[in-house]
Image (tube, helix red, strand yellow):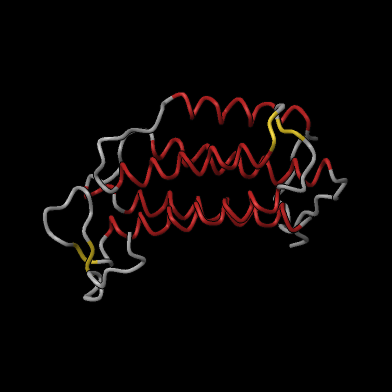
Length: 181
């Protein structure tokens, strides 16, 4: 596979679901772009988590993040028109991990400043980009571009990332700092 084809030099691309090339500024390509951004950022978090020795629900953090990357590739494929589908069980699996983390943490009483550690800051950044992906998907809803379960998955993913932010800070004894307003 060539690293470039030059076919997108005119600002258009070919999606799996399209018979004709579409603008790279289309709603669908915007969704694909933000999903790519999320997936790449999760990859950075995964790389940074390799030194994180604590397990999350008896799984290594890097393994959880890699599973998320696989899910995101599936979501991208579906969004591009592939007949693939996101495994519905994955949403429940995210919920189980979130619930397990919540049992380990003190109750949350306010919003928190990001950046307790480099890893928690990156996880929080990933959470914010997932929220943007949700907004982009919702913005495209009028075009019928939201396959079933994807918004629910992204909503759970942002919750999981927030739980991981708090978990990383908690096990490393980093104080959660609320905004002073």
